Image 1: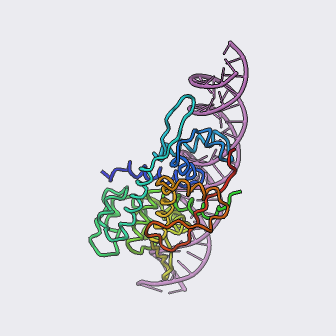
Image 2: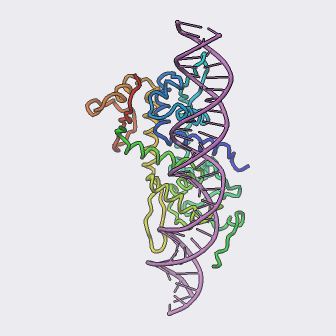
Length: 139
Length: 139
DNA sequence: CTAACGTAAAACCCGATGGTTGTAGATCAG
DNA sequence: CTGATCTACAACCATCGGGTTTTACGTTAG
């Protein structure tokens, strides 16, 4: 079951959403308190629609939520999502800390035939190369 | 204009580099042990050049380093960069954790050098730049 | 020397992103 | 009702990102 590629996509969305200074600032602002979208838009040197898109990206990643109040849409940061990113980083670091076989499962490896490197180091990847496309470099 | 585009760009690069499952796996692999680029390339269902680009992105973000050994280029993960991401997240979360006025001061102050918050825990002595970019404030 | 390997870099494709403007629907103020 | 605001959404454009292939170069092996 390829370790649930959904979680990989979720991680992609989280990190991608954070890979923009404007969006990080929006997260910071909305963690402090609720702000309407137009309120946020006034703070940034770009159009309302642009900020709207940024909020949509953040919402898609679960980093903020919107709740309607009258004609305003108030944006609120989601601290749990930040904790989730923390956890993802810890998973990455766990490998380096020494839990290699555990990470192989946790990491969103798109490889079904992933081998568990019981060896101390130097995981040799050739033996499972049969599963993926074997490209011959004849030229 | 944007005061700290340097650190913002660095954060952009870090998060962007992590916003890809292949790259996260490369980080994981190279934190475990050194691998040559072609070694890594054999593990992923894509061309060598594609993996090479991924490694370049990671290197640009400081998440891995390369050291040449003969004709091979060995890639090694950099755990410090992961800690840096951790710290960036903590900065974001610090707002929500209750230092709202503190963040407001940081956001508003052009010179945050005078006051330092008692840093919570394992903030290793890496250079910190938590002055956010100041854009124009609406009213 | 010659062949194979590992790497680098260029040229190219195509979909995604980030920005713009414009239009339209709701909602609140007078 | 009329007008101002807030929001949503579509169309459009430029650039970037991730992938491919191809070519070239340095290094190791035979």
